[in-house]
Length: 326
Image (cartoon, rainbow, N blue to C red; front, side, top):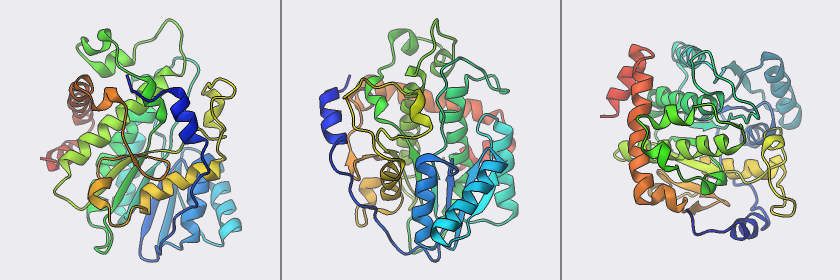
Protein backbone atom coordinates (compact mmCIF):
# COMPACT_ATOMS: atom_id res chain seq x y z
CA UNK A 1 0.00 0.00 0.00
CA UNK A 2 0.96 3.65 -0.23
CA UNK A 3 3.57 5.16 2.07
CA UNK A 4 1.35 8.18 2.66
CA UNK A 5 -0.50 7.96 5.95
CA UNK A 6 -3.92 9.34 6.74
CA UNK A 7 -2.18 12.10 8.66
CA UNK A 8 -0.19 12.98 5.53
CA UNK A 9 -3.42 13.23 3.53
CA UNK A 10 -5.07 15.33 6.18
CA UNK A 11 -2.12 17.71 6.36
CA UNK A 12 -2.03 18.19 2.57
CA UNK A 13 -5.80 18.37 2.22
CA UNK A 14 -6.24 20.90 5.01
CA UNK A 15 -3.90 23.48 3.48
CA UNK A 16 -5.57 26.59 2.00
CA UNK A 17 -6.98 25.88 -1.45
CA UNK A 18 -5.21 27.69 -4.30
CA UNK A 19 -7.23 30.32 -6.21
CA UNK A 20 -8.95 29.20 -9.39
CA UNK A 21 -6.82 29.47 -12.54
CA UNK A 22 -8.28 31.23 -15.57
CA UNK A 23 -7.61 31.65 -19.27
CA UNK A 24 -9.49 32.92 -22.29
CA UNK A 25 -11.80 30.29 -23.75
CA UNK A 26 -13.54 32.39 -26.39
CA UNK A 27 -12.81 29.86 -29.16
CA UNK A 28 -13.16 26.72 -27.05
CA UNK A 29 -15.95 24.25 -26.46
CA UNK A 30 -16.18 22.75 -22.98
CA UNK A 31 -18.17 19.63 -22.07
CA UNK A 32 -18.68 18.64 -18.45
CA UNK A 33 -20.75 15.76 -17.11
CA UNK A 34 -22.55 15.83 -13.78
CA UNK A 35 -22.67 19.61 -13.91
CA UNK A 36 -26.10 20.03 -12.34
CA UNK A 37 -24.81 19.89 -8.75
CA UNK A 38 -21.76 19.90 -6.50
CA UNK A 39 -18.26 20.40 -7.83
CA UNK A 40 -19.43 19.88 -11.41
CA UNK A 41 -21.89 22.75 -11.12
CA UNK A 42 -19.26 25.00 -9.54
CA UNK A 43 -16.74 24.08 -12.24
CA UNK A 44 -19.32 24.89 -14.91
CA UNK A 45 -19.77 28.35 -13.39
CA UNK A 46 -16.01 28.92 -13.46
CA UNK A 47 -15.88 27.88 -17.12
CA UNK A 48 -18.85 30.12 -17.89
CA UNK A 49 -17.02 33.14 -16.49
CA UNK A 50 -14.23 32.46 -19.02
CA UNK A 51 -16.78 32.90 -21.85
CA UNK A 52 -16.16 29.77 -23.93
CA UNK A 53 -17.57 29.48 -27.42
CA UNK A 54 -19.85 26.74 -26.04
CA UNK A 55 -20.36 25.24 -22.61
CA UNK A 56 -22.22 21.94 -22.68
CA UNK A 57 -23.38 20.45 -19.41
CA UNK A 58 -24.49 16.83 -19.41
CA UNK A 59 -26.55 15.13 -16.74
CA UNK A 60 -29.19 12.44 -16.25
CA UNK A 61 -32.17 14.59 -15.25
CA UNK A 62 -33.79 17.00 -17.70
CA UNK A 63 -35.43 18.94 -14.87
CA UNK A 64 -32.29 19.31 -12.78
CA UNK A 65 -30.22 20.05 -15.86
CA UNK A 66 -32.53 22.88 -16.95
CA UNK A 67 -32.40 24.30 -13.44
CA UNK A 68 -28.59 24.22 -13.55
CA UNK A 69 -28.51 25.99 -16.93
CA UNK A 70 -30.72 28.74 -15.52
CA UNK A 71 -28.69 29.02 -12.31
CA UNK A 72 -25.40 29.20 -14.23
CA UNK A 73 -26.80 31.96 -16.41
CA UNK A 74 -28.13 33.80 -13.38
CA UNK A 75 -24.73 33.66 -11.67
CA UNK A 76 -22.52 34.39 -14.67
CA UNK A 77 -24.66 35.83 -17.46
CA UNK A 78 -23.54 32.97 -19.72
CA UNK A 79 -26.02 30.63 -21.41
CA UNK A 80 -24.84 27.02 -21.35
CA UNK A 81 -26.34 24.08 -23.25
CA UNK A 82 -27.94 20.97 -21.74
CA UNK A 83 -27.59 17.43 -23.03
CA UNK A 84 -28.90 14.30 -21.36
CA UNK A 85 -26.87 11.18 -20.56
CA UNK A 86 -27.42 8.27 -18.18
CA UNK A 87 -24.14 6.56 -17.31
CA UNK A 88 -26.03 3.58 -15.92
CA UNK A 89 -26.82 2.57 -19.52
CA UNK A 90 -24.29 1.96 -22.28
CA UNK A 91 -27.03 2.69 -24.82
CA UNK A 92 -27.42 6.21 -23.43
CA UNK A 93 -23.67 6.84 -23.76
CA UNK A 94 -23.75 5.70 -27.40
CA UNK A 95 -26.80 7.86 -28.13
CA UNK A 96 -25.19 10.89 -26.47
CA UNK A 97 -22.08 10.62 -28.64
CA UNK A 98 -24.15 10.01 -31.78
CA UNK A 99 -26.01 13.28 -31.21
CA UNK A 100 -22.78 15.21 -30.71
CA UNK A 101 -21.43 13.82 -33.96
CA UNK A 102 -24.60 14.59 -35.89
CA UNK A 103 -24.48 18.16 -34.58
CA UNK A 104 -20.82 18.48 -35.58
CA UNK A 105 -19.71 19.37 -32.07
CA UNK A 106 -15.93 19.68 -31.65
CA UNK A 107 -14.65 19.61 -28.08
CA UNK A 108 -11.56 21.24 -26.62
CA UNK A 109 -12.06 20.35 -22.97
CA UNK A 110 -13.98 17.36 -21.62
CA UNK A 111 -14.39 17.04 -17.85
CA UNK A 112 -15.80 13.66 -16.84
CA UNK A 113 -17.09 14.63 -13.44
CA UNK A 114 -20.29 12.59 -13.12
CA UNK A 115 -20.16 9.90 -10.47
CA UNK A 116 -22.17 8.36 -7.69
CA UNK A 117 -21.88 6.36 -4.49
CA UNK A 118 -24.45 3.78 -3.39
CA UNK A 119 -24.86 2.11 -0.04
CA UNK A 120 -26.64 -0.93 -1.48
CA UNK A 121 -25.77 -3.46 -4.16
CA UNK A 122 -27.61 -3.12 -7.46
CA UNK A 123 -27.01 -4.10 -11.06
CA UNK A 124 -27.62 -1.93 -14.13
CA UNK A 125 -29.65 -2.94 -17.16
CA UNK A 126 -26.33 -3.94 -18.72
CA UNK A 127 -25.63 -6.44 -15.93
CA UNK A 128 -22.82 -4.61 -14.13
CA UNK A 129 -22.70 -3.46 -10.52
CA UNK A 130 -23.87 0.15 -10.72
CA UNK A 131 -20.90 1.77 -8.94
CA UNK A 132 -18.44 0.15 -11.35
CA UNK A 133 -20.51 0.95 -14.43
CA UNK A 134 -21.28 4.60 -13.63
CA UNK A 135 -17.93 5.60 -12.16
CA UNK A 136 -15.73 3.48 -14.40
CA UNK A 137 -17.10 1.59 -17.39
CA UNK A 138 -19.49 4.17 -18.83
CA UNK A 139 -17.14 7.04 -18.02
CA UNK A 140 -14.29 5.27 -19.83
CA UNK A 141 -16.57 4.42 -22.76
CA UNK A 142 -17.66 8.04 -23.11
CA UNK A 143 -14.05 9.19 -23.04
CA UNK A 144 -13.05 6.66 -25.70
CA UNK A 145 -15.91 7.59 -28.02
CA UNK A 146 -15.26 11.32 -27.67
CA UNK A 147 -11.62 11.10 -28.77
CA UNK A 148 -12.40 11.88 -32.45
CA UNK A 149 -14.35 14.98 -31.35
CA UNK A 150 -11.35 16.11 -29.27
CA UNK A 151 -8.70 15.33 -31.85
CA UNK A 152 -10.23 17.80 -34.31
CA UNK A 153 -10.38 20.66 -31.80
CA UNK A 154 -8.75 24.01 -32.56
CA UNK A 155 -4.99 23.94 -32.95
CA UNK A 156 -3.79 26.59 -30.46
CA UNK A 157 -4.57 24.48 -27.40
CA UNK A 158 -3.85 20.85 -26.58
CA UNK A 159 -7.31 19.30 -26.05
CA UNK A 160 -7.79 17.87 -22.58
CA UNK A 161 -9.76 15.05 -21.04
CA UNK A 162 -10.07 15.34 -17.27
CA UNK A 163 -11.56 12.43 -15.35
CA UNK A 164 -12.41 12.97 -11.71
CA UNK A 165 -10.70 10.46 -9.46
CA UNK A 166 -10.25 10.20 -5.72
CA UNK A 167 -7.56 9.99 -3.07
CA UNK A 168 -9.58 7.00 -1.94
CA UNK A 169 -7.49 4.96 -4.37
CA UNK A 170 -4.67 5.16 -1.79
CA UNK A 171 -6.81 2.88 0.39
CA UNK A 172 -7.08 0.23 -2.29
CA UNK A 173 -4.80 -2.66 -3.21
CA UNK A 174 -6.53 -5.51 -5.02
CA UNK A 175 -6.67 -8.61 -2.86
CA UNK A 176 -5.19 -11.94 -3.99
CA UNK A 177 -8.65 -13.27 -4.83
CA UNK A 178 -9.12 -10.35 -7.23
CA UNK A 179 -5.69 -10.61 -8.82
CA UNK A 180 -6.01 -14.38 -9.26
CA UNK A 181 -9.52 -14.25 -10.70
CA UNK A 182 -10.22 -14.83 -14.38
CA UNK A 183 -11.71 -11.32 -14.65
CA UNK A 184 -10.83 -8.43 -12.35
CA UNK A 185 -13.87 -6.45 -13.47
CA UNK A 186 -16.32 -9.28 -12.90
CA UNK A 187 -14.78 -10.13 -9.56
CA UNK A 188 -15.15 -6.52 -8.40
CA UNK A 189 -18.79 -6.57 -9.49
CA UNK A 190 -19.72 -9.55 -7.36
CA UNK A 191 -22.20 -8.93 -4.57
CA UNK A 192 -20.32 -8.72 -1.25
CA UNK A 193 -21.62 -9.89 2.12
CA UNK A 194 -21.92 -6.23 3.14
CA UNK A 195 -21.89 -3.35 0.69
CA UNK A 196 -19.88 -0.27 1.58
CA UNK A 197 -17.96 2.58 -0.03
CA UNK A 198 -14.91 0.43 -0.77
CA UNK A 199 -16.56 -0.27 -4.15
CA UNK A 200 -16.42 3.46 -4.98
CA UNK A 201 -12.70 3.57 -4.16
CA UNK A 202 -12.15 0.51 -6.32
CA UNK A 203 -13.97 2.21 -9.21
CA UNK A 204 -11.77 5.28 -8.86
CA UNK A 205 -8.68 3.04 -8.91
CA UNK A 206 -9.95 1.53 -12.15
CA UNK A 207 -10.43 4.99 -13.66
CA UNK A 208 -6.86 5.93 -12.75
CA UNK A 209 -5.65 2.75 -14.45
CA UNK A 210 -7.66 3.73 -17.53
CA UNK A 211 -6.21 7.24 -17.65
CA UNK A 212 -2.66 5.93 -17.41
CA UNK A 213 -3.28 3.27 -20.08
CA UNK A 214 -5.01 5.66 -22.47
CA UNK A 215 -2.34 8.33 -22.08
CA UNK A 216 0.33 5.80 -22.97
CA UNK A 217 -1.53 4.90 -26.16
CA UNK A 218 -2.00 8.57 -27.05
CA UNK A 219 1.55 9.70 -26.27
CA UNK A 220 2.27 10.60 -29.90
CA UNK A 221 -0.75 12.95 -30.02
CA UNK A 222 -1.38 16.39 -28.57
CA UNK A 223 -4.34 15.26 -26.50
CA UNK A 224 -3.84 15.42 -22.73
CA UNK A 225 -5.67 12.92 -20.51
CA UNK A 226 -5.38 13.17 -16.74
CA UNK A 227 -7.11 12.21 -13.50
CA UNK A 228 -7.86 14.76 -10.78
CA UNK A 229 -8.66 14.43 -7.10
CA UNK A 230 -10.96 17.30 -6.01
CA UNK A 231 -10.43 16.47 -2.34
CA UNK A 232 -13.06 15.71 0.26
CA UNK A 233 -15.85 18.17 -0.47
CA UNK A 234 -19.26 18.92 0.98
CA UNK A 235 -21.59 17.74 -1.77
CA UNK A 236 -24.37 15.29 -2.51
CA UNK A 237 -21.74 12.63 -3.21
CA UNK A 238 -20.01 13.03 0.16
CA UNK A 239 -23.14 12.04 2.05
CA UNK A 240 -22.28 8.39 1.45
CA UNK A 241 -18.51 8.59 1.94
CA UNK A 242 -17.39 7.93 5.48
CA UNK A 243 -14.49 9.74 7.17
CA UNK A 244 -13.69 9.71 10.87
CA UNK A 245 -14.41 13.01 12.64
CA UNK A 246 -11.38 15.26 12.62
CA UNK A 247 -9.53 13.50 9.79
CA UNK A 248 -10.22 16.08 7.11
CA UNK A 249 -11.64 19.56 6.99
CA UNK A 250 -14.15 19.37 4.11
CA UNK A 251 -13.71 21.70 1.18
CA UNK A 252 -16.70 23.50 -0.22
CA UNK A 253 -17.89 22.31 -3.61
CA UNK A 254 -16.50 25.51 -5.12
CA UNK A 255 -13.07 24.86 -3.61
CA UNK A 256 -13.11 21.31 -4.97
CA UNK A 257 -14.08 22.58 -8.41
CA UNK A 258 -10.87 24.60 -8.59
CA UNK A 259 -8.97 21.32 -8.87
CA UNK A 260 -11.02 20.34 -11.94
CA UNK A 261 -10.32 23.71 -13.52
CA UNK A 262 -6.58 23.39 -12.89
CA UNK A 263 -6.52 19.94 -14.47
CA UNK A 264 -8.44 21.29 -17.47
CA UNK A 265 -6.50 24.50 -18.19
CA UNK A 266 -3.66 24.78 -15.68
CA UNK A 267 -0.03 23.74 -15.84
CA UNK A 268 0.81 25.77 -18.93
CA UNK A 269 4.25 24.77 -20.20
CA UNK A 270 4.04 21.40 -18.43
CA UNK A 271 1.94 19.62 -21.05
CA UNK A 272 4.18 16.56 -21.26
CA UNK A 273 4.07 16.14 -17.49
CA UNK A 274 0.28 16.39 -17.45
CA UNK A 275 -0.27 13.43 -19.79
CA UNK A 276 -1.54 10.49 -17.77
CA UNK A 277 -1.00 12.43 -14.54
CA UNK A 278 -2.74 12.09 -11.23
CA UNK A 279 -3.46 15.64 -10.07
CA UNK A 280 -4.09 16.75 -6.50
CA UNK A 281 -3.79 20.10 -4.74
CA UNK A 282 -3.42 21.91 -8.09
CA UNK A 283 -0.29 20.00 -9.07
CA UNK A 284 0.93 16.73 -10.52
CA UNK A 285 1.13 14.18 -7.72
CA UNK A 286 2.27 10.58 -7.35
CA UNK A 287 -0.43 7.91 -7.23
CA UNK A 288 -0.49 5.14 -4.65
CA UNK A 289 2.30 2.60 -4.31
CA UNK A 290 -0.11 -0.08 -5.48
CA UNK A 291 -0.96 1.76 -8.70
CA UNK A 292 2.67 2.39 -9.68
CA UNK A 293 4.03 -0.85 -8.23
CA UNK A 294 4.52 -4.22 -9.89
CA UNK A 295 1.09 -5.62 -9.01
CA UNK A 296 -0.62 -2.42 -10.07
CA UNK A 297 1.09 -2.43 -13.46
CA UNK A 298 -0.12 -5.99 -14.03
CA UNK A 299 -3.63 -5.10 -12.86
CA UNK A 300 -3.68 -1.99 -15.07
CA UNK A 301 -2.92 -3.95 -18.22
CA UNK A 302 -5.43 -6.64 -17.36
CA UNK A 303 -8.13 -4.06 -16.65
CA UNK A 304 -7.45 -2.33 -19.97
CA UNK A 305 -7.70 -5.60 -21.89
CA UNK A 306 -10.89 -6.64 -20.09
CA UNK A 307 -12.44 -3.21 -20.59
CA UNK A 308 -11.75 -3.19 -24.32
CA UNK A 309 -13.28 -6.68 -24.57
CA UNK A 310 -16.45 -5.41 -22.87
CA UNK A 311 -16.61 -2.35 -25.12
CA UNK A 312 -15.95 -4.27 -28.34
CA UNK A 313 -19.26 -6.08 -27.91
CA UNK A 314 -21.31 -2.87 -27.79
CA UNK A 315 -21.23 -1.53 -31.36
CA UNK A 316 -19.07 -1.31 -34.51
CA UNK A 317 -18.34 2.34 -33.62
CA UNK A 318 -16.70 1.26 -30.38
CA UNK A 319 -14.70 -1.40 -32.19
CA UNK A 320 -13.41 1.27 -34.57
CA UNK A 321 -12.56 3.61 -31.70
CA UNK A 322 -10.47 0.88 -30.09
CA UNK A 323 -8.77 0.08 -33.40
CA UNK A 324 -7.85 3.74 -33.84
CA UNK A 325 -5.76 3.57 -30.69
CA UNK A 326 -3.43 1.12 -32.42
